[in-house]
Length: 105
Length: 198
Image (cartoon, rainbow over all chains, first blue to last red; front, side):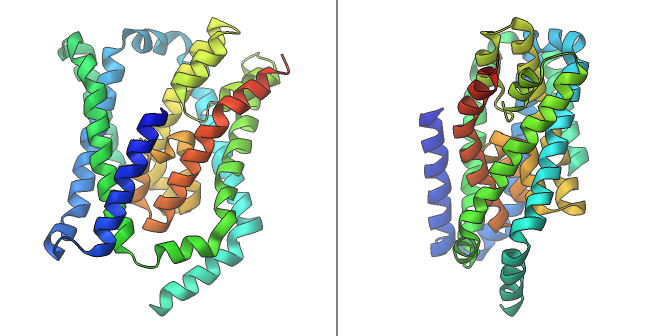
């Protein structure tokens, strides 16, 4: 995990440097969005493939699926709720300031 | 986007169950790594292109940590409630939620206490990742960008990051990465903390 985290961080930083220095022409950047979409879908297909190939996961879907589904829905739901509350309590002012400056650009 | 995401995952699962030979599994980890690196490069280029992103992050400052902290609290509370409904003790449910989507680690840690809890941790956190990937575009559109980050938990720095970056903006993509790293660090600590009430 640690090695991969460093790899991901490194690649992200390289991307930021490439983007900020405008190393490629505008043609490349206009295709960024399409590249991202294709990579996301390809990645998700492989993720699905890994789940399908893992007999342990496939077998456990039936037995503990409902309980696991409930835990997953509750954790996602409460994460959304808590961040929404946190945003209202702590971030509203900062975000408004950033939005105002964004509009000035 | 949500429909395409669902189609890609379902096709992948069906291919895995019915078509693909088992030996392919050994290579899929490398494919995922290559795909993720490619995506993170694209996301990075997108972030670098928007000149005022770093300035915006400075503006928000320590408050960027609000997201992972609230996600941690929300996940644990949600897990506790679900756990109690399923007949587990509150701290066991809290430990399930404290996996924050990092299924391999939380499952291994909880299987030391009970294999049922371990299996449930594995499955619920796999499902959390899948649910997150599917609903991020909808949450971003109808609720908010930071709420979209919250869905993936610890995976918001890798597997759900591309979908978050695609559905939100560069500033949120950076917050997503920070959230993922923070929750990844918090996962082993929070799972152990919950199970210390055992």
